[in-house]
Image 1 (cartoon, rainbow, N blue to C red):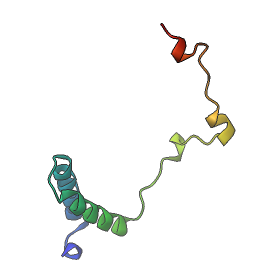
Image 2 (image 1 turned 120 degrees about the horizontal axis):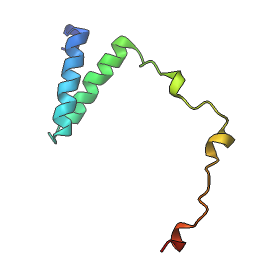
Image 3 (image 1 turned 45 degrees about the vertical axis):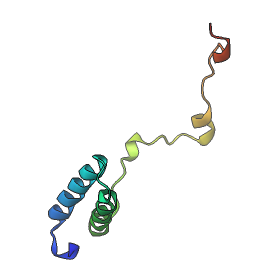
Length: 75
């Protein structure tokens, strides 16, 4: 029955079921997943914004500035 719906209708149903799932409805999460999966199948994977990705080498990303004090010595 999902194949008979337009892309906009599938998107609206996905949003509605996701909203219902967030409100605690028992089987809504599964339904939201089905509609979202159908929407991804039709439209393809979402486009990533590569401008916001951290493309530094792993060593630089993992290097965290250490605090000059140790949290267990805080008073």
